[in-house]
Image (tube, rainbow, N blue to C red):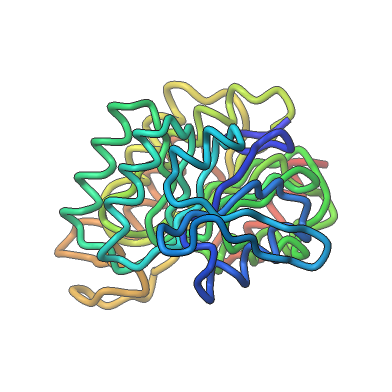
Length: 292
């Protein structure tokens, strides 16, 4: 089993005909994702050939869902148009919107998250790598060849590159689903959302949580783990050497005074019973030991 994304998922790509959309649509198709259409108002009615698959382009998300019964969309559109793209998907009844775009203004993200939530659309991102359920489907930019095996581990991470590294280090054991939630100050799906989903997934036996400096998401996740999660959790926090007041990588990865430090997050997780690795490789070793 998997969370949020399965082999039955029918995927749209908003911005499919752009350079990034084309590149990653080809990758997703090669990974077995059922990409049923693209959306571009200026290229409606065309088709795009991807190796052995032809994908139609629709003018709007409602037109695409009516023709394909799509239930997932991946947003590759530029930042000025991302808000409208997510809202259009929510209005069309799409259940999951994966927003890859980075550089979206915070006020736009706040607006489309609230709009989507009110209409029952889950948003992952923005500024995220997406998610992958190995052997089933891949929605976003996560390289499918890093880890191809289904397994017993669920992974939730703020960092895209650390998602890839942990997937590589645990490639022989496999994953149910790996979710990159993004590191912007405002994101749609949180660590806690994924923890709850993995807790309810009968095939997930171990959860890996990757966090980073900035904000209090990891401290809130630690409290949730202590109160609600029965499965073992292994953690890693990036940013122990980050200087105060400097944004590191993600827009939300900034330490301000005593708030949001890696040490505080590690202590909160360990107090909740989470084993926290000092490096990604040690985190992988802790996971392998627990699985064994």
